[in-house]
Length: 227
Image 1 (tube, one colour):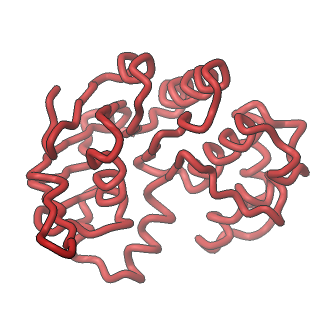
Image 2 (tube, one colour):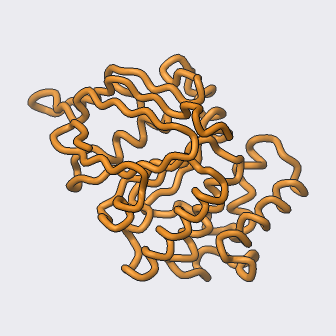
């Protein structure tokens, strides 16, 4: 991937939420540009809007105003159906809660995005096995989520986020549900994958240690960024 290439452009992002009494402005004109292979951390207090911003740049929510462009495609111009397909093929997500399918094995969970994208079961299985090996779960392929530790479940979620070779990976408090030691291992994994695969990684986190290891660290306060 060309490291001079712009992967994400978010310009003037506002997001207001209606309440019973008035309109609550949460995001107040946020802008962010990321190049291929860049890592950016967003920190800030709970409820400040970090998750809302990630949902908007990932096409899970729409801004009240402003524009998001990923790999030259304006998310604002996409229908919901177009957005769903674009997200699956272009953006990887890792959430605080892994959202794994409980009735499926680790291997099957990682295969799902590839099957949705139209790959054969054979191709999806081979790729999922390779990804799980890369995140240290070679011996856990057939295990279901309830047979895995919290850290292992998050590693499956990381592997799943990479299934379709996304141009952008969004991680929303990926270690928020883990103990310190396990969280540090997941941080190391994300940064290792960034170096190995030239991942473009945007992470919202309370963890200052992770934030300081990223290329840029933005603090969100009162709906705006401070670098």
